[in-house]
Length: 200
Image (tube, rainbow, N blue to C red):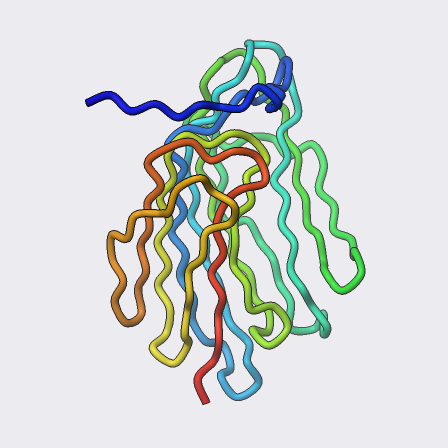
């Protein structure tokens, strides 16, 4: 049986840059730094195919937000980053506040291909009492997504869809591990959220 997802005509495909992501995977691991004060370390290993409209040059950003009240307990580092198996040159890196959030952004330039294999690992340290959400909101169309969250037993994690047409399939839902898969198209601004709560 062939299944089709209809993409609304109101969705604009960017010209000369990203058309969509393919096979997006995110493996997230949470561990305690100091349970008494609520600081955690979150390691997120991400891989996907970036499909471009053409071989022309374009800028590609990596951007993340974290709600932070005490910047002394906050760290945000990309520990590994490859494009087609090679480390790219980061042309711009910035960090700034937007109200109670810190935004960090790195930019690279891509050209010469219509498909890029992108892999990177981000490690964050912050207080779970400040920011108890881990989520993904698509900037571009995503074709198939898998996410896996490993967390300490004394942290409750609840998964919820963010505006998707269908529910995510549950692959694993055990104590300390949640794995979900979306087998169809995720449109821009859709995605998922994990809500975290520390057990007393």
